[in-house]
Length: 64
Image (cartoon, rainbow, N blue to C red; front, side):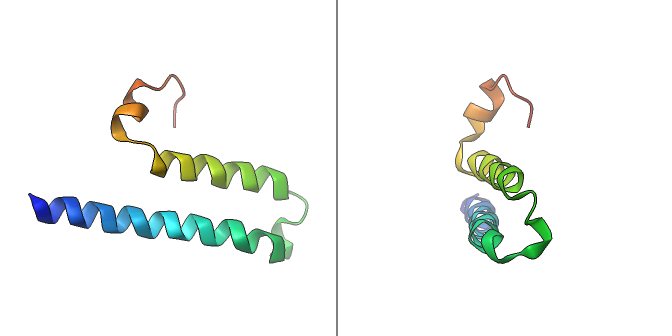
């Protein structure tokens, strides 16, 4: 039981660090130069999904 908790949080931490890395690299990527604001909002939204708890997601009115 404890192993599953640790494993789940390791993958969650990797996902969060990946999103933060994408946000910081967004200024240097020419590929998204025209859509920076849109991509930034998209990354922040996905970061909020990972940072919010499971109960908050289940009670949310928005679909993720």
